[in-house]
Length: 199
Image (tube, rainbow, N blue to C red; front, top):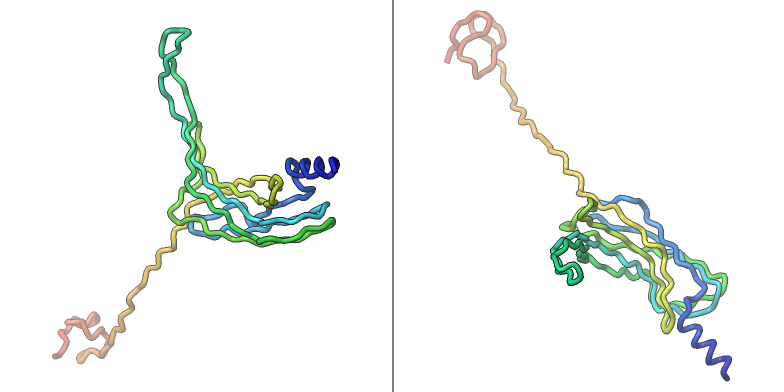
């Protein structure tokens, strides 16, 4: 009886013997594009999963500084802190509930859109915008099994090529009444002999 109790207690604090691997079809995506990838799941034990999802996040970090009173030194001291804000968050379900057994292996596809009005990836000494995605295998009553977090490079979409349309007009040519040289119907004088065109 006690052995079964401790086994269940141990299960509640330990992850299942399973691995989630995440791969994307490319490393760089544009704003407004779809992020597509694969979650591969393998298992060494039998258990039930409640969900398999990809967690897609965009986080902005900014370094802020302010003066803080230090009681020990009796003076204001400059202190820098990082402020973090989540700009985009999406949990993309790749699968609902399913049963895993030892030697289980299966791949699941997922796809989610990157907001067209989002921020592109960038980084500096005092600010950054980072896009990332990770796979999560949720297990009821036990810790989740997660993949490594993969950073995604998000760029501005390429500018659409400018199409210049040329207007082509058909020019009607007529012979000069004096020398016979062909000239545009809109001409007033013949380019060859200089005679005025007859009306």
